[in-house]
Amino acid sequence: MKNESIQIVKSIFENPLGFFKLGTPQVNENMVIIPIIVQEDKFVEFISIKEAEELNLVEIIETETVSELEVINKSNKQVLIPFGMTVQGGKQDRTIWEPILLPSGGKKSVLKRNPGNPSHKYKIPAKCVEQSRWDYTGKRGFKSTNQRIHPNVAFEAISASGQGNVWSEIQSHRSEMKYSMGVAPTQSYLEMTKNSTKQTEAIVKN
Image 1 (cartoon, rainbow, N blue to C red):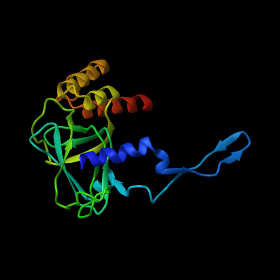
Image 2: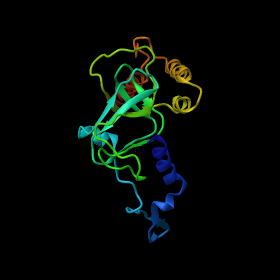
Image 3: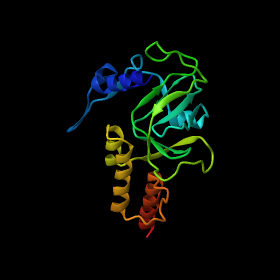
Image 4: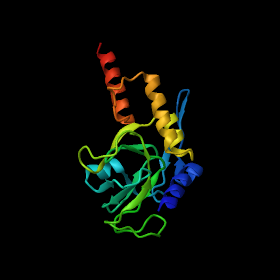
């Protein structure tokens, strides 16, 4: 499933004209607009993980391994988990560091292999972005967030350098932003960025 997901996403970027076509140029004085049209018969039908969550059709589950999560897709469509998505909850917050396209529940995947199963737990790769917590503080599941990790943290997440480098980069971010220890005491990157958002909003109001 993992290799199929990567193949699908890569194919869109490597051969965009296989999925899109250019429409008739529209000219207005010194401006030319060329429509980009989706070739629906070539595209994979899927919904985002956000949409699936809103409909209670996907479940993200904690495992006993920092570098791995499990996901159940209960929908009849494939579910896209984008690169760099962050999830909050479980025993510690995580980032999912590669794009994943989950097979639809009970249906075959896009490449006509690996039949979907509405109760099957798919393992997906993850990196921790909350170093100082390994226990449940509320519900045991996860919810995706709208927060994206800093490019430097993302680079370490996708590299082969290991989990320690991700934590080190988060600490560097903390030092650069001069957060006090009262901010994100569990070293949660998501809590740090929430604090930055609050500070920005306060500045805008004033």
